[in-house]
Image 1 (cartoon, rainbow, N blue to C red):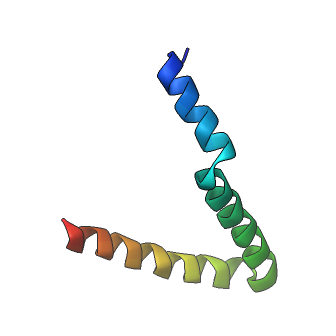
Image 2: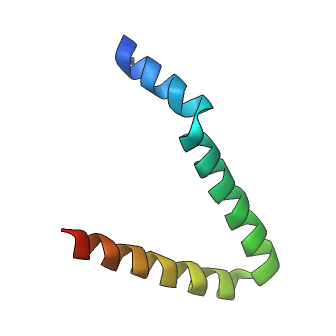
Image 3: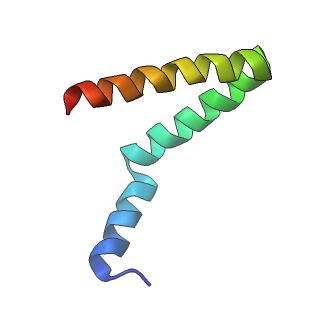
Length: 60
């Protein structure tokens, strides 16, 4: 069970910008998968994940 602060944080996320970003990303992913097909979708998203991973390592 969430405490009051955790509940408030969750409610903010559910209606705030983070929710819109996640929902938009999910919609983009669904559209891209349909448009590109499995092989190209996973190839392109794999490249993006490697770039993000490297950027994160460079920041540390």
